[in-house]
Image 1 (tube, rainbow, N blue to C red):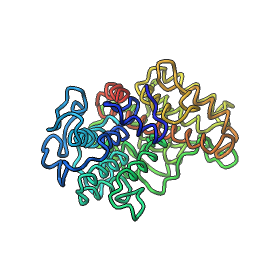
Image 2 (image 1 turned 180 degrees about the vertical axis):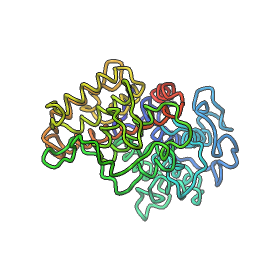
Image 3 (image 1 turned 60 degrees about the vertical axis):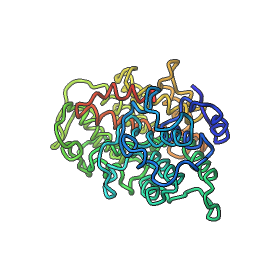
Image 4 (image 1 turned 90 degrees about the vertical axis):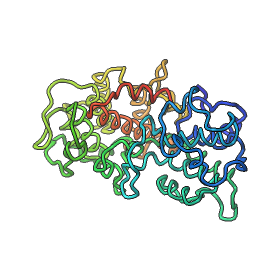
Length: 401
């Protein structure tokens, strides 16, 4: 797999007729947007309307395969490359098809912000600024973000600015999957007051007591997973993950142990996904040993072993790890999947003394990005499995994107 590490390398790769392997969907779409060096003469306003279905707001993942449509233009022409990029921003969202009607007041319908940012840029290329502005908004960026005020239609400058930010990290987090959650779950994930998870807790200022009695922020399964629940254990793991995201350790721990609460069922027997979520919680706990004298790092290793070494999210996480630099990228197995035990070792060696200590700022940011990605992908898996979808097949397909 070719790993693109900087904007210069990404630009140089445009000489090829194929996008580099290993880019996520947003970067791949951005690559196709620049393939013809912004030769926009044949585009014109409302190109996507002219091209019609399935390019206008629809399509499927099959459109991205070698056997997909010809986009109404000769291969590798500006119109064809634009169509490839636009179809990708419309039809992929880290493996999830965006099917909901987009509501400007409902973040669960927006899709992934990174793809939306590129989508807006594509409509700027065709000079459809009204359409572009809406997509920039869903991408949480001002239209023309990255451009100096005096640059006018300097698409190359903006492309480089977008590429630099997208290459900085995959930036996958629970928020990346809001489009696959219910509006209620998306509102919890998208809470702007939420403090990002630390890479490890500060032993002198933690609130993890293992009492499991507070449930200060009550999150009920029917509220965040409306409709039929096909797998109760994954539903509980989903709710526990929402608690983890908000730093509500006791609530998460009680559910992951299967203890339940007045509003959550008790769960008999093991569950690999619940064990995986449990392992994340204890890795963040770090050096503390409140539970039976076992430090959090060792407790985390125990629960990762319970989760098994073949969870379907591990290949997806391996690709993300390699995008985050050599240190985090080394936390992978020979088959390319993520190795959580190597990641524990990396975190423990650099940050065991507490959040903000030890390793360099660059390494800390990379580890935090990996942790956010791990929780985001696992939450998305829990949601799909809880509601009876073919989660294993979906996530194996994600690893191939």
